[in-house]
Image (cartoon, rainbow, N blue to C red; front, top):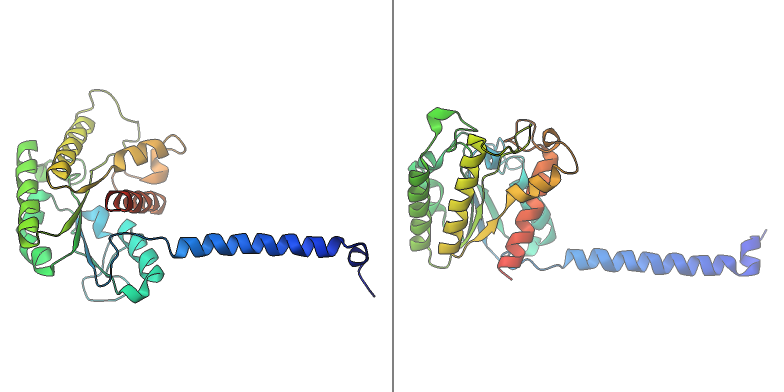
Length: 252
């Protein structure tokens, strides 16, 4: 028994519309799959450094599916490893939970320079401020800048062609940013230092604070980072998206 729609020609028109729609979807997916990210060249080594936000509970025992931890760095690596398998890009995570810039400096040779990265992404500063690790880990602003500066200088000396990505430290107090809040002001000053270093070393600057401030207009701070410091999966997705957007624009 034939369909009435076929007899009146409506079915044919409907099928044509469906085919056009599917073709458009296919075109969009294909465009996304071949979208170029300038830094992901063949055999590129990409190293993530920092504290617990980047550590992401990474595995220290060479367990292949947990080497990068769980967070923005994992999202970035997963997305582009699947997208460009033929390029054999290597993603490495050597961030250590609880680190401030001085602690990171103590392992800089073995955990950074010896790994010979082509691109180095660093996010450090929340513990230095005393927000993340308590006052015992706090590093004065001048020392924070001096130590951070030397680490970047050493990385550039080891590889003059290294590409640097600096993520600004961020803070999401549950009560919102208040004028005169000492911790909030400290973080803002460290953000200014990171921006200054990014300019000095021609590094891409990932402005996480604005991303989270904007996100908090859509949902409470606890939705993105329960303790104001460590992002939840929703927050890490925001970080991954901003990292990719910033790096793609800066190195295009």
